[in-house]
Length: 434
Length: 113
Image (tube, rainbow over all chains, first blue to last red; front, side, top):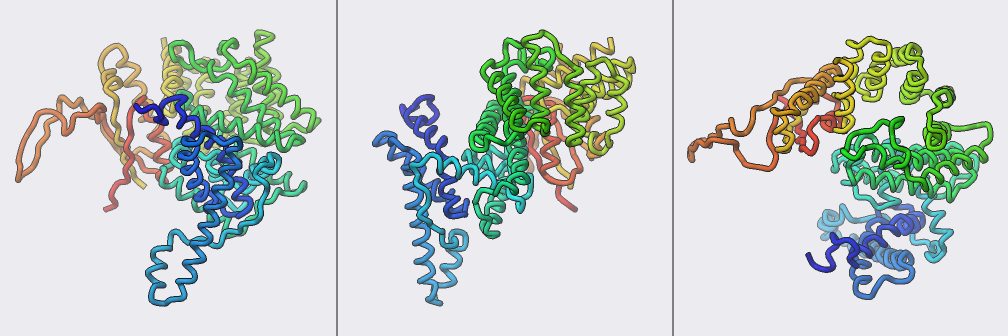
């Protein structure tokens, strides 16, 4: 391995790469908000990053790496525009028109609108651009399923292949969806301006949903995969960014609290032997104290900014916070959890919230009501949904209906993605039978 | 749309077929099969005996027969499922639930005849 190999931790190349990656979202936001063309901005930035890697390794990292990248990428955008203009001139010659058309078919772009643009040195402006970018990535004209992937790519510079891995989509299909989304934004002339106060209320939920989707994709069941947990950190960063920029929005605080509190428990989800540990049995000493504090502070912010009107993320964060309370009281207040789930269901009914409420009722000692609720869910929505079968199995076990419980356990096992969860459920099933 | 989920298990996983962990190993596969069936997507499949049971033939003109699998590799072709689902995304969801930690799943659409 050579000294400058990017694979080697702390090598200069790796450090440069890290800085570049960190700046990616801010720089792309500055460029794209000026040109309203994420594709063109990405190409220009990609070239600038290649230039940066060699220039910075040679001359050292500049004092303002983001400013450096913005300048280099703007130059590339200008080059792109010149190339297109030159192509158009030659276009007039009918003899070469066809040949050129073939050659440029995939490269020609509409003239990039190179506005004077914001001053790259101004931090405030760059921050603002990232928020504008978030709203563009979750624009109503785009399909909801592409919101989170587009955000991860445009703001954090993740590759289509990595995003595809997290969302369980074929890489070629993911790339295609991302390109199509960006093309659509350009063709529909979506402006990258901040929505006004009124519009913000209707558009912010989509931004928050997308961040939550990114977080869920990372965690879902694949807790062991290093790549996946890294994505969770990225989602936490995005959630923090929103509250940094829109600090008067209670649901933004609620979302941040929710993802931060879940993240705090990352090391407690497995025991020393790699076995799965359910939340109520986790060792609180393994929870990350700093993240717990941050999460609880965010929940307070959510309550202060939106008194008397907790939204769905704030309510989910409140449920997390009840679990956190076990650090201080040594017990879980299941009645409080049931109350929050009931409020959540009243606010925005969902299969997930119903299953959560059932689990809460079961733990509070009311398996009859839990089963009634589970039975009320539409079978076509839950028949391949792992959490449904896991909670149902435990509920039936509590009611002494062991045969039915064993069947439900089997489905939960068959639908699990995570080997540790699978092993845990298998053990529960076996213990019940003996 | 029909897909084959072709399962390459790690040697370590494959070894669990017999021995102290055999019970858990087979229980996980049975549960997965039931999940496929109950969801109405199962369209066939088979588990295969170990590579040491294989016989490999190369056809004429360079006719040849050998004991053992076609190619030695770190992973073992353990079997396959045929599933009938809406699209590749759905096939990938099912592939991700296959109980073979560390294994590799090749997902291929079936030829339409």
